[in-house]
Image (cartoon, rainbow, N blue to C red; front, side, top):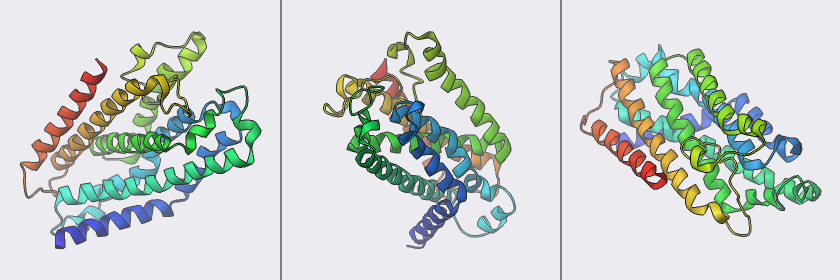
Length: 276
């Protein structure tokens, strides 16, 4: 009972702190800009591009908060490292979920009040209507989960905010260039067979509001499983890295750590096999 009470107390604290950040609300406004400025492109790749870029800015301080002096308070209590790590991740994920729901609400309202934009010939007819379709929330939640888990791993490895942001930005630029920018310059598109293992933005997929995921259904499910598997592996390795880097932390049941890593490896291998 005490362990669960501590867990939920940390979850509530982290979610509340995230929602109090000014950067969180600025980010929500930036994500809604494509609803008015249609030159930025179709909504799903645009939103995911910005989402992945901003996640370390939003969650990095919380992930690294106990790495310094605040950790003296945290680890002087009987809080288990696994409980604390899982609670922080859960609280941040719930905060990001609130942002995703706000985004969907914003796109829905924009589709009602600016119908001419949403039927523009620049896009597949009713492309923006995809945002009010339930599967659009799944895309945002997947991006929240994978981005948060990968950020947690990188944060536990570098142990400082500035290197975290620099390394993440470099990685983001590399993926963006290979998935969106360079293929656009080539003006011939990019084979999804080649991009399937790194197309984290789900760019260049033929979605259809009337047919759900349309012709991309099986491919999207396979890609989602692959990225989710990588995220789970990153989360388990992040916990391992935090234990190795900070001797103040401890796990009461050490068998849980290799079990979590094994689950992550199996999930990543299963997702790879679906796309092979």
